[in-house]
Length: 411
Image (tube, rainbow, N blue to C red; front, side, top):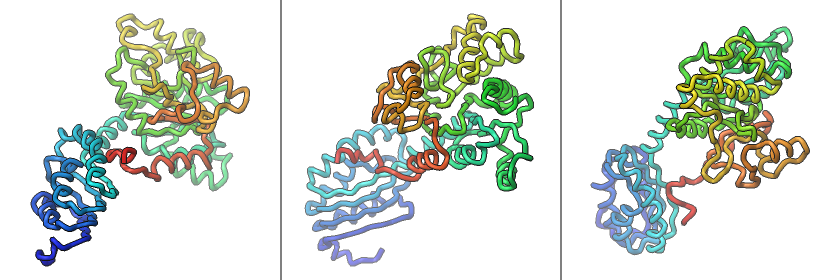
């Protein structure tokens, strides 16, 4: 950087944009800015490296603002990398006082602070749990090209392992559909005991899938079952599952709870823990008389009834450490799993069938409008592949809001 240092006190506007990592923020950048006593407009873009404290609002005031009394507009993008982890708790406190600092200096403020180390740590944590999540989606030949493709192209690769469960008859498909099947055949799980594709066989389909995954995929702690018109926000699911690890007694099933309190909505997606799969397999590895006591046409109810029966049969030393269906609402009582799509939960049900499921079947009293959705919502059901699923995915992952860490709501 070349300049006449004698001109620094006379500058009115100054912009420093340094896109490479720098460890000279304290030694060069701050002393340079302090010499610009008459500065009115400042833009600062820098990525700060190897600093043992995060750059926050208080430091901006002490390092820069107190020395630039004529400053009117401050635009900055500050990115702190490798900051000491112990400072992360202080960021929120600094974030809360940040607006007051800039208001007290009567500044027009455009602000963005990025704490890369914190985000990297969270990403590593999610990846650790992601590798323990097995996701399987029930579909059929007719829906694979439409619903299945939408799930594949949106939330599929956010699971540790993702498979479709269906029986294939390639002679029924067009050349285009066969090309799709060949391309994605590696994620279509071949389960030898899978029944014919018919709604009346759905219970047997889930039964065969759970036993197959228990036996052939033992390295996963959680098994998510979803329909091909279910959209899953996997990151929120992972955060939720991580928060349940220390629960005691340990639930074996998570999802949208019904009033019967032993099963969770299949459409909204439900998660069985490894302990749940073990319990299920222990008593239903063969379709014995015990299985006939809990089987019904609705697959989600079957899973719940069979697990409930398994609890009754399990030795006390096993059952006492477990419970059936875990709580999934957030601290404000808002649901994370949703058995219908967004408009139904936002506006309320529009027909008798939906009203039955919304008003009379849930374990919790349903709330509509904005309070229907937890900020950490996990799922929506009945999402149409050509509209809802891609739109939801785009809204979540492509459109970004301002960084909450700078408390823009308070500015």
